[in-house]
Amino acid sequence: MNFKDVYKNYNIDINYDDLIEETERKLEDIFKKHEKIAEYNQYKVLKAFNENSLQSSDFGFATGYGYADTGRDKVEAIFSSIFKSEDSLVRPSIVSGTHALSIVLFSLLNYGDKLLSITDDPYDTMQQVIGISGNKKGTLIEKGILYDKLELDQNNKIQYDKIQDKIDQDTKLVLIQRSTGYTQRRAFTIAEIEKAINEIRKVSKDVIIFIDNCYGEFTETKEPIEVGADIVAGSLIKNLGGGIAITGGYISGKKDLIEYCANTLTAPGIGKDEGLSFGTHRLVVEGLYFAPHIVKEAIKVALLFAGIFKKLGYEVTPDIEDPRSDVILAIKLNDPEKLKTFCKAIQEACSVDSTFIPEAYPMPGYEDPVIMAAGGFVEGATSELSADGPLREPYMAYLQGGLNYYHGKLALKIVLDRFAKNNFL
Image (cartoon, rainbow, N blue to C red; front, side, top):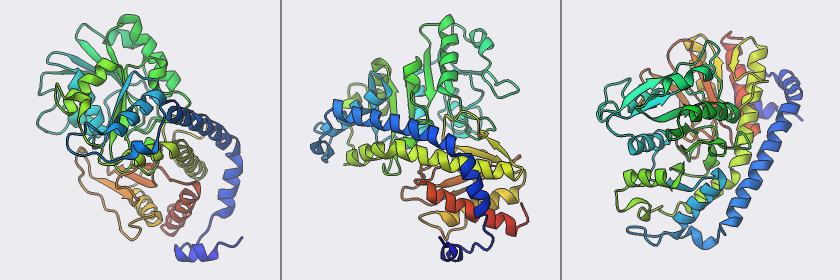
């Protein structure tokens, strides 16, 4: 089949089809593994729809306080079934993953309580929520909440043998960040999270174990609550939204903890009983329906980029054979111009705003200027094709998403052409 017209349309003068096809053949077994994971998770979603009797009437639009918003309760029950949790809070008023995480921390921690992160400092936006970077008002530290961390070892692994020593009488909540964030480590697997939870429980049965689940949903067949976590949170415009949910976030876990979170989101005495979903139910559950497939497609895109860039001599995280527990691929470019070229090429491949030229600029919640390629049907939806990175050494490009593999493959061809034209290969 001749793709000359496609290449002409995207100004691709140098094609690497042979290299890409060779890499795809080498990745076939890994692709099949993720196909099986997606199949399992698809059945999990369908079971949750069935056992909670999802009906077309649940897609209605309520007004006012939302007392008649019965679809809202149905969506939250479905999330609880998927996460194997006691209760869930799924709302369009949760504006991002960072907001969902922030709600949990401000709900469950009081003056004098200690937050312990055992996966080193969390990513940039959460550092400002805690108050260890930036100079923002209303941080956890400003409200008298203590913070401590357990650094990762030299191989970017959790120091399991030091967890117990880090937990003291003030430790109220232990945070585990599942995904890589803006680091050079791979995401922690469910098995690794379970091992950490077991270490925590040896010293405390009461400490709250909270998992930042962003970018990790449906990458494996289990979720953190199934291995002992108390509460998880994330965004609906990442994995679970399937490229269809237009906004929102979720929190899922023990019923009493969710009650605290609901009271923070609304008010004590109101909790989960009020709050409109603004007719988003259908989009949320339809996105959830597509999510296992979308996550698999995103992982395949990441694997293809990883295979090619590793062959070209770049360091990639996670490596091809590494276990995957999020959808992010980090490529170590070691050059600001390469990072800019990478993001500009991804922007050219985007479904929406493909003519825009991304530039590095200060973003809320980040200490360094960030260059971001993102042009999708939902603004900021990293389940769609996107790439970004802070303008700081070692100039890592963080690739996420791709609603379908062919789109990601085209993006790779554009990136390779632009790198070749700039003598970066």
